[in-house]
Length: 211
Image (tube, rainbow, N blue to C red; front, side, top):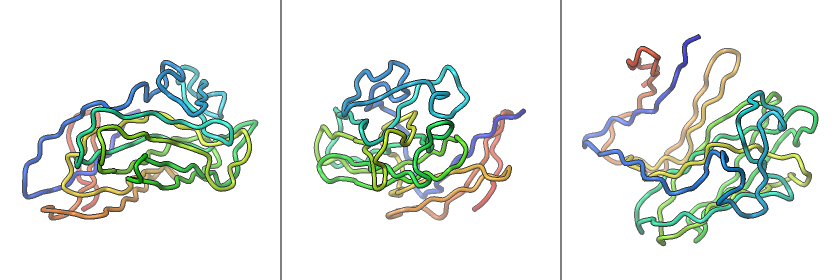
């Protein structure tokens, strides 16, 4: 089986260097709840309906949240927060519509993420915020209708400097019936002509899927 990776490529007038400084600790939960607060809960993926015995993840529900202070930020710079999320399935499923509220302190960003998948599966989401302080706290908490102990499963949280000349609000991909559907939205765009969605194959070349 060939592994496929899909990239959203921004075609711009200017060349922009890409930087990937790390601003969050233990985003993969490999070290359990270390660095995480707000009554964080972690466990193996299989406990929440997944298949990977070796993958440690976190659950956000009515009694367990996630929060961590992001430090060394530069005021005025944009940062991209991304994470994988799935509705909890298996023997103790979460509500059919599972909502989690996400916020960055200082009123720089707040939104709700929803998952409705009937079988366990990771869907990546992300958002951009602009730092108004050198320290901001990112938090995940139970959203509307999430009142029990079964909630949304979170993994692979990362925060990086955003090199984009666009303000990307969301970018999500989901596998359905052997086809991958992508949806994204931008808040603003500068000096870019169009967006390209490209596929990276194991042979390390790019194939344009859509423009």
